[in-house]
Length: 172
Image (cartoon, rainbow, N blue to C red; front, side, top):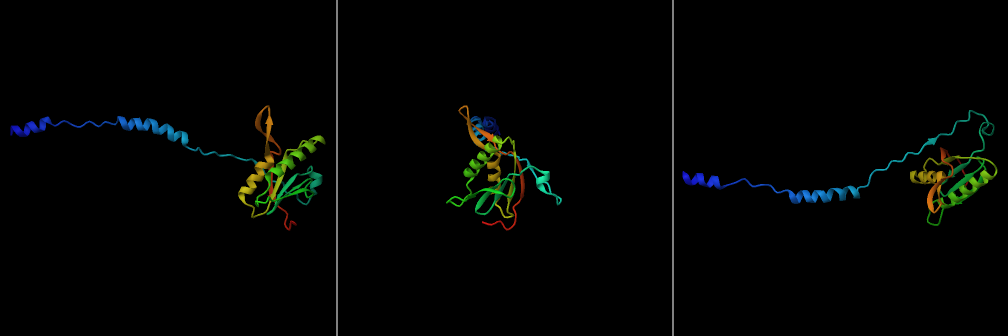
């Protein structure tokens, strides 16, 4: 019996060494946090155009600036219904947002020269207009990149955006 007692007394409990695991966690957690992409939510405030209960729009509202999104073009109208310019798609088959931005910048300057401070625009789209196209047009009409004091900033074009349906039977 003494032999059995001696064997049990010599055994000691093994200690768990987690130092290397803690070192790994100390390095791994900050690296994962730095590489993590945080969700970015942007909210665009929109207004819906008022319905004209049979009354003439020219009597109630000032002249409206419109961008009509077609399948293969973008029309800029000012006043509403009077085309200023049609911007055809590029050779790649995408809308030319750079040309739209330049045209709207020119219109903004011309309106300021006439003493008109306009900051609203109506975007008219087809029912089957792609969501990304609609968002890209909204981003283009709201602001443009400008260099001010050696810094690139977003300069406002027409920040008050309204959405509506494009007229049916628009000629290409």
